[in-house]
Amino acid sequence: MHLFKYLSSSGACPRRKAADLIKSGKVKINGKIESDIFYSVKKKDVVEFGGKVLILPKFVYIILNKPKDYICTLLDPKNRKTIMDLIVDSGVGRVYPIGRLDRATTGLIILTNDGDLTQKLSHPKYEILKGYKVTLDRPLRKADFVAIKNGIKLEDGFIAPDSLAFVAGSKGKEVDIAIHSGRNRIIRRIFEHFNCKVKKLDRFYYAGFTKTGLPLGKWRRLTKREVDALKNLEE
Image: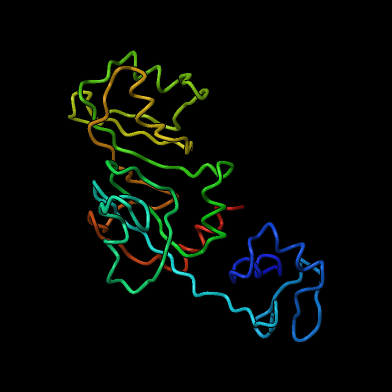
């Protein structure tokens, strides 16, 4: 890990300040000042800042199948249920959500205390692929289906899904949609554009993960292979 990243990951400072602190000679490695922000920190290295030895926290990565009516936050001033209530007895400590879901939406969400990964995967430039099952209040007309598939213009710009399909046997009231965009309420707004109200919204695919073997309200830790795959999405 590069020194500037090590500094921020340890909680010593925000990433945007790490480079300046290193260049100003305020960081030591094995007792000597190190001013190279790209120095590769090794396991045996002792990194010091402000007279204290910096230690990386133990990162935790879990995936959760969120039920309806849970808020994607750590605390809620209105005392509503939060996703932390679902993992309160897990022993994982404080973790933060990547790819938030609104209160009414169910489905996959990743939680971690790896702030660097959270920041990167939440950035619009990475455009993580997400898959949703959408249940509408009325059948979607074929003409509207074609229009959505080809792309439409909303108030914040053009949007086109990666894929769109009617769910068999739903008589046009259910569709599966895959999309990279992380714009606010984008799925609901797409269908509201055609005067269709979204009654249910479930995210069944997120960043390479599916809900297979993960019941509603349950969670599990990601394997090392899964974490590595998730981090490779940064590249």
